[in-house]
Amino acid sequence: MGEQMVEFAKIAAEAAADKKAKDIVLLDIRGLSVIADYFVLCSGNSTTQVQAIAQAVKEKMTQKGLPVRGMEGYEEAKWVLIDCGDVVVHVFRTEEREYYNLERVWSDARELSIV
Image (cartoon, rainbow, N blue to C red):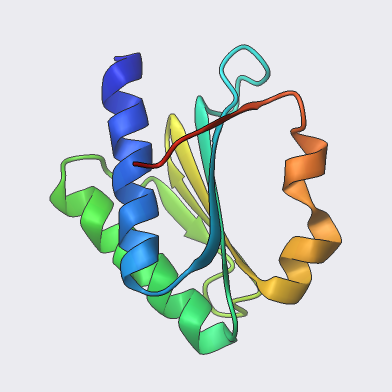
């Protein structure tokens, strides 16, 4: 199951990249949290781009067979959280990403290669 989930996380990262997301990071948080196994973090320059990235990720995950349980923050589009169970995708506007700095919060997580 772990191998399949990391592949889903990579698919989410690729969907974000297709919409020109910046600074895409894949974190392995297994053993650090019961929230999920993997976080995908990325940024967009504007609320419009954040929404486009979030929509693309949601569509791609559903298309690949991993149901999206929920999506929070889409309307405001400063920080959109896409809950796919063991994979959670965070799409930030650049300013919010710098402010919340999840990479620091989850500094014990292992960063994985997206490729």
